[in-house]
Length: 81
Image (cartoon, rainbow, N blue to C red; front, side, top):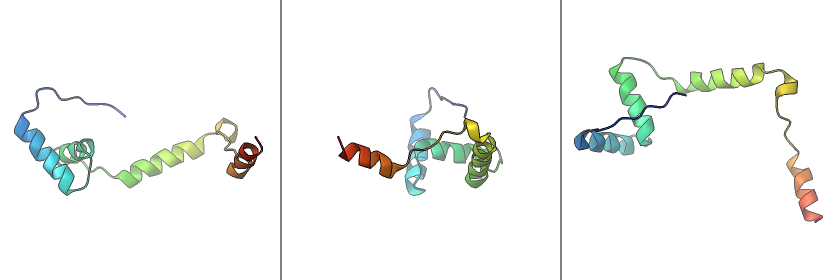
């Protein structure tokens, strides 16, 4: 995901953004994205982003996916040390 850095942000704008973020229980970065999306009249749908990510992961061939180790086996091995 692209990164945006804002320099010389006026203090009053920063404070307003931080207050909104706290009210809406978001991080400052999440609130900045929400405010930018509203200002640009663009819809930001977190569910569709997650769905796209999961579909991308599942579309990889099985041999490329990482095999997860059974946690019970790891615990047994650790206890035997």
